[in-house]
Amino acid sequence: MGAMGMEPMGHSARAGAWRASRAAPPWCRGVCAALYVGVSVFVWGADASPPEGGEGRAGDKSTPPGMVWIPGGEFTMGGKDALARENESPLHRVRVDGFWIDATEVTNDEFRRFVDATGYVTDAEKPVNWDELSKQLPKGTPRPPDEALRPGSPVFSPPRQRVDTGNPGQWWRWTAGASWRHPEGPGSSIEGKGRYPVVHVTHADARAYCAWAGKRLPTEAEWEFAARGGLEGKINVWGNEPIDHTRANTWQGEFPHQNLKEDGHALAAPVGSFPPNGYGLFDMAGNVWEWCSDRYRADEYARRVQAAGGAGVIVNPRGPGGPPTANDQYVQRGGSFLCNDSYCASYRPSARMAATGDTSLHHLGFRAAKDGPGPAGEVESARNERTE
Ligand SMILES: [Ca+2]
Image 1 (spheres, rainbow, N blue to C red):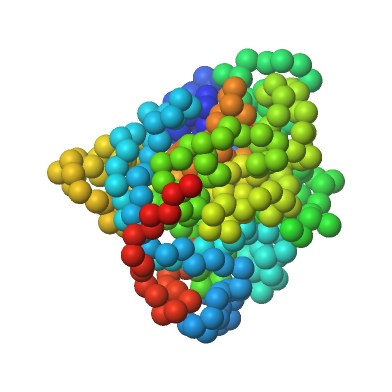
Image 2: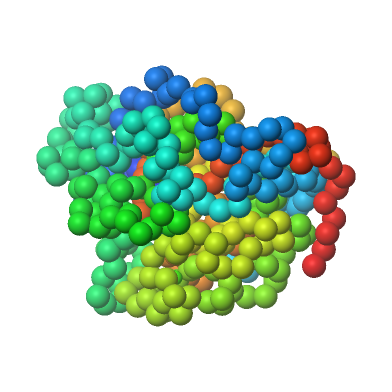
């Protein structure tokens, strides 16, 4: 699901999916169009100039606004519960240094401040330069329809009746004009939604915001450690009790045609609408997916354990190294308002998802992190051994 936040899109990058499907499958119409936007990611990067004073700037001895200090510690990373996927194995011990992390997903209000201050234009708001993009696609790749080259992003568009959940194209619609300002497409807006999580942001967009704010994206290990809230080896961020509508904003009913909205939210919810975890972090389960800094590999855990000689504690893992490429996928965590046990139980803290960095989606946002020192000049703490 990577890109689509659903299983069937699996971990295939949009660009990868496109390349692999010269004869585009039905889902590719619209969804694949999103991949075209990707290349424009590289337009920004270079001229990104972090501001003198961004959100979250604070004296070293104070708490950055909206952030929570996560004391360094050790934990078991990965999952092997009944809903766990292969990419969550093997379980392995990880230690992370202390770090700050946003208590909530970055909101529309916060992102707007960044855009107002910098004039930043997100990738979903940029038209696609086909001449440039075609250089990165197989020779002979046909030019997509003009519609697919207009600025836009995929929007969740539920079918009216039961469908095969193996085909995300049945509920994702490439929507020209969809962006963080217009989450459901033209005609929708974020007026009155300042406290909703920003969505339709690519990995580059998220990094640009972080740079402006004097922050960074969390690593995948930091994210999972923070999500666990001090609990060790639990299935969910609240413990081992199964999910219900009071815990997180996910999907109740039969996905994707029947949304019972028992949790009160058909799509995203204002951040902080559900109880926080043990560290005081909100929406670490559900609501919107959150980008992490790591590049993604399904077998990353096996590789890192092997590299460590099969034993010991992995310290501050940062994901696969090597020179980045346009096809790299980046980790997403936390699941979204579309998660449902029948389909995608990714609200679990160990669940891993990924998409190419050029991906923007209706249910994909982020939260930021920041290095220490912590509240008492703390860089890292003793082990975190709180149990439920
Ligand atoms: Ca919901």
